[in-house]
Amino acid sequence: MELKVQTQGGCASSGCGSSADRLAHLPEAIRAKVNNHPCFSEDAHHHYARMHVAVAPACNIQCHYCNRKYDCANESRPGVVSELLMPDQAVKKVLAVAAAIPQMTVLGIAGPGDPLANPERTLETFRQLAEKAPDIRLCVSTNGLALPDLVDELCQYNIEHVTITINCVDPDVGAKIYPWIFWNNRRIKGRKAAEILIQRQQEGLEKLVARGVLVKVNSVLIPGVNDAHLQEVSRVVKAKGAFLHNVMPLIAEPEHGTFYGLMGQRSPTSAELTALQDACAGDMAMMRHCRQCRADAVGMLGEDRGQEFTLDKIEHLEIDYAAAMQKRAEVQAEIEARRAAQHQPTKAAFVSLASIERVRPQPKPAEPRPVLMAVATTGGGVIDQHFGHARAFRVYAASVQDVRFIGTRQVDLYCTGSDTCGEAETRLEQTIRALDGCEAVLCARIGYEPWGKLEAAGITPNGEHALEPIEEAVAAVYREWLDAGRLESITAEPERLSA
Image 1 (cartoon, rainbow, N blue to C red):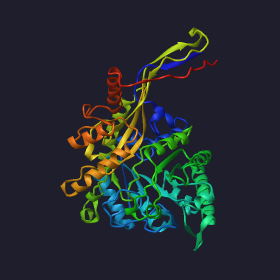
Image 2: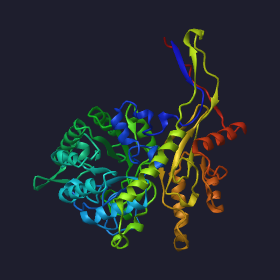
Image 3: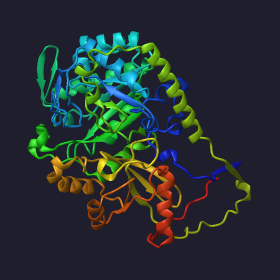
Image 4: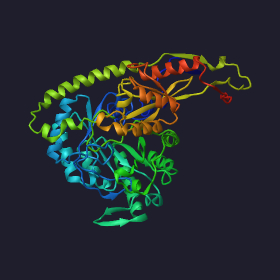
């Protein structure tokens, strides 16, 4: 028997969200569906773009964390849109975006209400797109209440990916999250409402999995409400066939006008979110790169180009989509070639277990502690973003063994121009709180003022690795700190040899 030991570093698959290795248990056909889907694959979101169209204004449930806002360009969170669209308008916008952004692979309908509470508008949009843009993957996000009755229609239009928001599998927990649902032409409240919603969500999940549809489950982490319950949610949805679980932090600022926000319900800390994601992980792939996008988001995850494609700007466009499809195919083939080159298998050495002397296990020598580092990046796996331009930071754990992606910390823009200078200090303080636990920030550039504030908070700014691959740069900083004696040691427990 031989033990395979990897001898070359890089990003450990176990730490990279839904990496290819973590999806190895899936059939090849399903892995192919995920390959270029930025919302389902952590690796793909560095290379591919997505868009949402807001055709679904109505919702059939009320959540304490939700406040749908129309005609709002200043907030980036679910339920917010600048323009509500009719199906014909949505299709025109999709064709325009797909022609202008050849990296765009996915079209989703996610609101601002619930797409399946607006079945005519949602299904008509999908019907036209399946015909006019056959190279675009189609997705839908839903609370699941109406899902079981519409699975056949969704499959008719080749919907390959569905996201269901499941915050609980216990009606007593659900009663604290959902004040009411609208079901069978009547409003139902309290525990009964939660019980019906949970049953419909589970039924819809089972039907989708039986039809071969890839299902991601979203859960909102609400401290004191469902934080101790989400591990059970993860266990249940995995058993029923969901392949990816996305645990997101509650957004509860009072200015958003949600019930939780107005009642003082706090959001989870970054450390609480990471700990819960780790606890839910097990064999279940966890999504850690979610940006909690607007219902009309356009572009790469973490950016919003929606204002480039408003109705007045695309109304008179003449789009040659056949030519656009050809261009898209060429661009995406180049992307796949680059990805293949970046993910060449590493060489391995083989050690015979018979050659290992079996002696009483001894304590391992002390080793340096791991370090969390935050990275500002626009995608593509390199450090290429100014600190003040980041809407999110990717967090990596560096150790003597490897560099692992841990998750994403969302922040408000620190640098937004002279007209908001008075808000900059508050935003910087919020960013520093969001980076709690991180000991370094790697970015392309950083200003003098945030540099000093970060250092005062115990976070070391670093702009020396601009345009370098993220994992290599994080590893280089860790080695520098190690050589400088900055990393006190920890003592590892002795490992046991097993036959």
